[in-house]
Length: 285
Image (cartoon, rainbow, N blue to C red; front, side, top):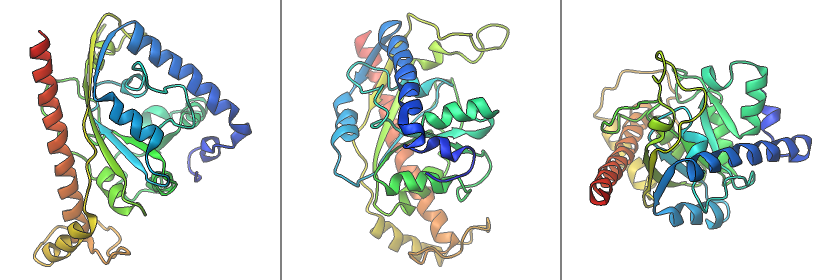
């Protein structure tokens, strides 16, 4: 793992891996208690996520993407029964907002131990810490992202996705498996405006949580890149100062077309899962 904000604390060999293991045991136990014991949680297609976390082909990276309903989505969404929540080696890396999770040295150290990668909101998809995410994927690791970019507790369609996740899919040396997840209920466990416009001090209980796990999305990147090169010749995107040529020969316009196309495909699948979750809820009722 690279440098940046306390990058050394994010290394697997930091103090023999003991601090990381302790953090995942503690946070994992907390997630299990809140998600599996204090609240009622139903999970659709859990076996697909567990299989990909445990048994995907060696060297094949995994990117999971989900909507963002509360500040505790991660780690609570991994606290359902049967998931190896407390296993630090199997655990996800996650992109985390630098201004929230890395406010001071203590928080930075804890979140680094928890395999969090700081992302500067508004810093662009080619900011330095995105290279850390690429390192994770290059090593065949699991990375989780909230591509909507911020918490929204409204029961509303999936918002337009930021391009960062799509850029990682394109730039990874081995095309990642992309697994979409949609959930609801965590906004009731940790509401943004509970008491005088503030969050509760501890997660609430006796709420219904639903986690809908989709099927892996396979992207034919070679075909998409060829189309992007063709489209870019006819496009007139305003320049954002990106690297104008990638190893694949993609200029900025081609990169934008590619990231928009991939993001739209992921968003479409996530919205389909959201609607499916609504159908399950009505059927259960």
